[in-house]
Image (cartoon, rainbow, N blue to C red; front, top):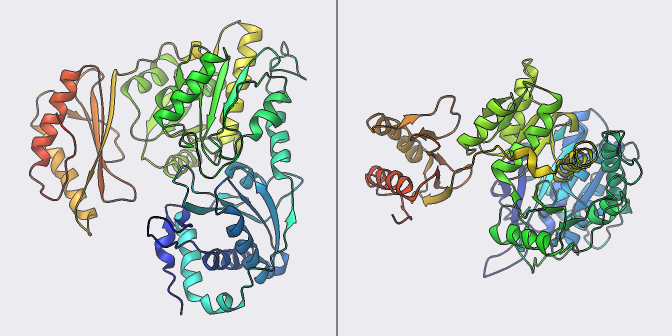
Length: 508
């Protein structure tokens, strides 16, 4: 038996690990692991589709990470060892890999995207897709358990030098699909051939795999993309973190918009399943503003529908969706998969929930297979921008002008210094409910699905929750005045002082 610790590679619905030896830490996402995953994925697909291994076709793609090519070759080896056919999409986006199971030119039985999103350069991972969507956590657990059980079937037979993979140009076909979506939804007043000819639109791909959007979509539709930046894939990520939530990254695209006098700026994460935008004034439209914009676009055609979000959205956003747009705001748990699955559940019960969106920028539309796709989200924004320009001569930022935002938004992460941290953390949350009941002006928010969310008057609120994966208590606070922030933090610090295993790391 090998020393591979398969179960430790699980990260939510993905496989993730260290793929490059760095800072004295040995890689655990090795070529042997990748080959084993490829081998088992084919067997898992065949069993679930009731097909022979030899009938299975799998596409493999990757983002710009330094370890991508060798992991791709190893995956391919495992896939071929299992008897299936494998196709290399090369540099691709995560949503494009799902679409490789759907698009008419491809329609593979399964797909694997090699990515670790915005994590550091030495990390990597795998996301898995079938025509039904991304695999659930229990599916990935099954794959890892099977890999551990069946190691002897593949480890001794892997020949990492003999990988031969058929190449496909998936990203061009995917780009054509996005362009069709845009053209299909344009106002008759808009030039159908070059609908973006009136606009200067710049892209920041963060040296990930989103550079295709500038050339294959925007320029093709007539946009001026001069001033776009960091389009070249580079797994060292030399310019800024490939993450729309990163302050430095967002500042970079804001400055680029202002310097280039652009009408819109677009920023993607490494594998393009997340995005944010910047309007012509330099206003960043991400987090609550991005949700508000997407909700405004969706609810125009589906009045009264439910918008499902994660748990850290603001009071102002709820008011905007319900009072200004006439929709329903359903605030659920953190984790894009949780948000998506909740929207699917509501739909299955007859409640219209056309958009599932997390503050991190994961946005999934029912009309697009509930796939969290940054490029599709941006396509929806571009459609609305072109239509507004033709019909009303107004701008995209005007749609969210009535959104009230708190002046102060803070997040604190406090470590629980215990190996068995879950019960300890849960007890803290239960005791917090009792504590809140005795604080004047505080009340636990209704319909709360994660942690303890407390309204502290007007727009002030906080949420204390357990991290999805780590021994960490996460505290999110929004309020309008520094005095309010100090009061909330002081009271919580007093409460948390009763728990000596919690490292309170904020100063008041």
